[in-house]
Length: 528
Image: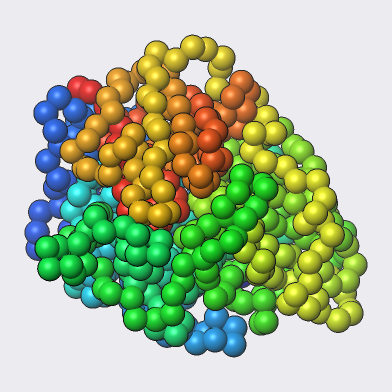
């Protein structure tokens, strides 16, 4: 990632080019493989992803100047900082090039798929038109190998977001990148801005791939789960739940099943996967990225957790952070030493740079490993990779402790509809699900436009789950922050409210990619 002043960032519009006006706000994406781009047929009685209700909601967003981007998903050979791996990435970079637009713009991004599998792009955190949400089999057809697809939609709200596939476990390769939506009336003042993307990494290390890890997990802990055995005693291959791709392969690399990773912050079990590496902006702690500033500079840091199975506790040694946003929406400013980010969560902070060289450390919560970058404003030795700044054990703010900024606060009120989503399953059988049912594209929980909807996440499992809602933001508690991803601890219930103002079919799922692909996903559907 580049280190830029805010003025430079605003001037260049990283990774975007072009201009003009959107000719028709009801225009949907284009499949450049010669096949119709029409989304899968929706169920009777529900709004279709490309229905007139979706077009009307898009028109209300008043699509503005078009920003064109071209992106290629391709096999790549990448240096992570002392370790070279074969993986899949966007344009041979991890993270992919930052896409930066201004709220009110229309983003027109064409993805060319040079992968050996179908793929897609989900725009994490955006309230966008439903047929551009990037969920194969639900809102669009998969983008086949060798084909391309244009995503075109109005970008209504500023904030720190990101994008990634919603196809199998492709997210746990190198297919992710930040999407920064500038506020044309930005109220914050700062000298520099950095985007910090956190990740856990195993793809291409000693023969490991995410598909092989999922295949190992699907056998259950200690081979106790025999529910997928055929009559001959052989493991039956499973197709991906979100693509039509080939069955998951049998594991051939080392076991990546993690035992004994615990965290009080996460309520016990910290995660399933023993990753060999943890990254900040695609670099290991042995060869970290260095951010440069002057003493006294005011710096905005945008944190994104793009991990597959890891929560990160982050701190900047020798500094306190002022939290200004979470999941793209402003909060009442709050000071902290450290933050905890579940997969899919984002936080924006302000710091005033000290004099020297300081570790920006991302501790893999409960896994006893860490990633690191360096803030350098002067001389002195660089921090060692193993450094653990005291701020990691200082004051830690979590989302439930924050208050939404008044400009975006959801008004108090009772829900018109409550949807109870019990989180079910176990590591022993790896049978993760919602309300005891594995993901089925035909399953719907109905809502109506204009309703205030309460999602009641009831965690009946012994693991934590970062639950993510597509196409909307919800509010935590009375006056709590606006978010799209919320940590639900074991044996606890988290109630969140949102206004149903974006018609279509929208996924709700755990953002642990292995839990989701094993079945912990479901769909909210707007009734006609």
